[in-house]
Length: 169
Image (cartoon, rainbow, N blue to C red):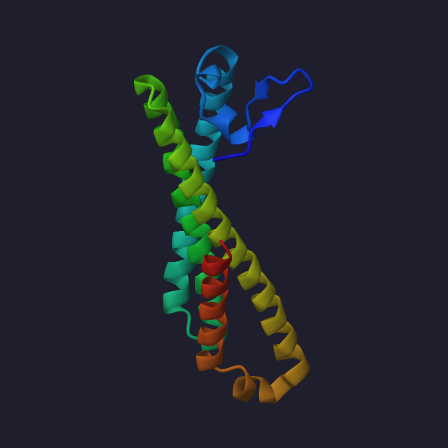
């Protein structure tokens, strides 16, 4: 439960998360803006879904990439795909809780989406960093790159990203 904020008069003000899942956001202009954002979000998530799916399909067919690099690209495409898929149900749950006035459902859904979204975003950022380091090592190491950067080591790195972010969240 979030801490209670008291103003100078002693009255209770609502926290940000309480405002996001409250009846005050259901009516009028907020609902119209919400519908516009959802429409744009759906359009962008559909294109991102198909784009990441195409990347994953092309990585399965591509044989010229070094397997550890392929693993990093697959991990990045997968986490980006999951970020889009996990954040979509929240708006539907918000509208459902608004129509049935089950505001606690909205709060639980927001917490679940926030935690899983943070995990996927952080893994995605760490994977992008690993791709940059991988490309730098390929340039610096030259012919020794394939001996030093192995698939087993890359699996350990990617697994470490996931475990670290799951534990940290």
